[in-house]
Image 1 (cartoon, one colour):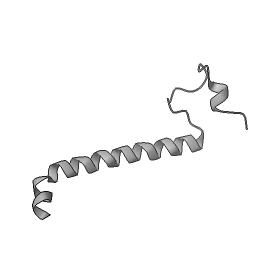
Image 2 (cartoon, one colour):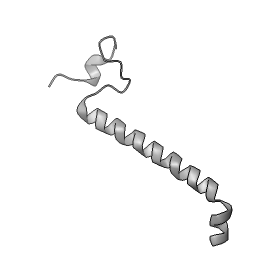
Image 3 (tube, rainbow, N blue to C red):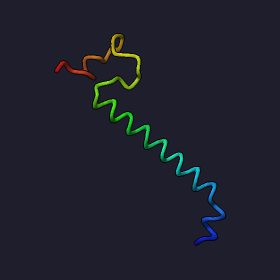
Length: 57
């Protein structure tokens, strides 16, 4: 088992970094959605679907 970890350490580290970045992106998107922010970061003024995304509260 230790031999496997030593031989594949670079792959394991890179995979963990990719998974961590992916998780952080998902967490940021969820937080932004809860705050009512747009996912495209350009506002909803010109979007044809603005009424279906953000209903008036």
